[in-house]
Length: 154
Image (cartoon, rainbow, N blue to C red):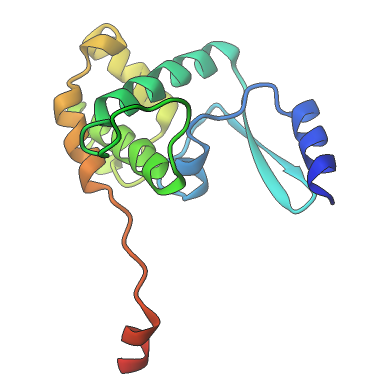
């Protein structure tokens, strides 16, 4: 399937693209609202609820803004580079889970559940303890690849 055909199919089939797709695709998080759609040999993630999509969009914007300093990015417009986006998504959700005392579920938290409980606990997104959550974003740096030189010496 050519890229143009894929994009055309994607746009027809995906109404609300999951804004936490990188975290879900990395199997670090899950979401009960996401629906996987297979398009050729790829999988697209679609949010099944328009309101939940809006909530997640607002949350990811807040997480990106809160993480600007630790990511060394003075201005964040749109999405981040791949590794930093994964760091914000995974670290942000795990950080919120820890703030909610979900120690047992922090390895693969459900984004919808965490969001819902965060709103129930804190009232709205502006009241989340972002200074604490940012610590988890900083800690969630992906491991760097080992160089081939090191592989040869092993």
